[in-house]
Length: 291
Figure 1 (cartoon, one colour):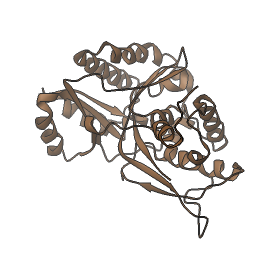
Figure 2 (cartoon, helix red, strand yellow; figure 1 turned 30 degrees about the horizontal axis):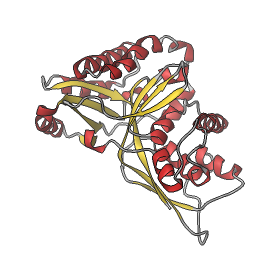
Figure 3 (tube, one colour; figure 1 turned 45 degrees about the horizontal axis):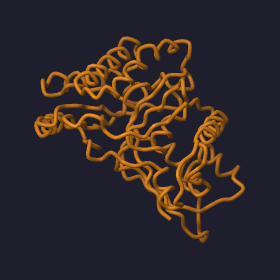
C-alpha cells in the first residue's frame, strides 16, 4: 500500500492559525510518499523525539513503512508528512479529522512544539484547503481563478519552525485574524486580481509586524517589480521557505523566465495541485468522509 502525501503551502492565515484564525492553503506535488513494507529488517527512520517518533512509541499497532521525500527543499510539511506516515495505516476514510488534529497537537506539545495542526490538514484534505475557524469546517476546493496561474518557488532559506513557534508570544499575534480572515474569504469571490491584492496586503502586514525574514522579503520585492507578477508572497515560518507567485495565464511563460533569471527553484505550479490523504483513503476503502 502506497500513499502520496502532498507538500503544503500556507497562502493566508499562517500565525493566525495559532490564535483561532481561518486558513487557506494549497497541497501540491511533488511531495512525500509512504509505503507499507514487511516487518523484516525494519528500522524506524525518524527521530524518536519527533512527533512521529512519539506517535510510533505510543502506538499499540505498528505498521513498518518506507518514507521518501520527493521535494528536497524545506517548507513543504516534512515533519507532518513523517507523522502521517506512522498514522495512515491506522486510519479509515471516515476517521474524524478533528480528533486526529487534537492528537497531533497533544503529541507535538509533549515534544516541546506548539502547532496548529492545519499544515497537516492541508496534506490530509488536499487541493485548496479552506478551514473556517467559526464553523470548524474543512473544505477541499478547486482552483477558483481560471485566468490566473501560480508558482511555488523555493528560496533555499529555512527557519526551524518548531523552535520559532515555541518561543512565539501568542499575545503578539492575537489581532492577526482581523486582517487575515477577510482575505481568506476573498478566495470565494473568484476575482483573481482582488485575491492577488489580498495576498499582497497579508504579506505587507506580516512585514510590518516583523514576521518576514529580510532575505525572503528582498526576493519577493524583486519579483513584484515585474508588472506581470501580481503577487509574490513569502510563506512559511518568517516567510523564509517559499514564495507564492501569481500571474495571469497569458503571462505564465514570461513569469517563469523571470523566476529563473533570479536563480530560484520552481517547486510547483497550478498544474501540480494535488489530492490529499483523505481521497486516497476513500479510493482504497470505498468510503466517504464524515466529520
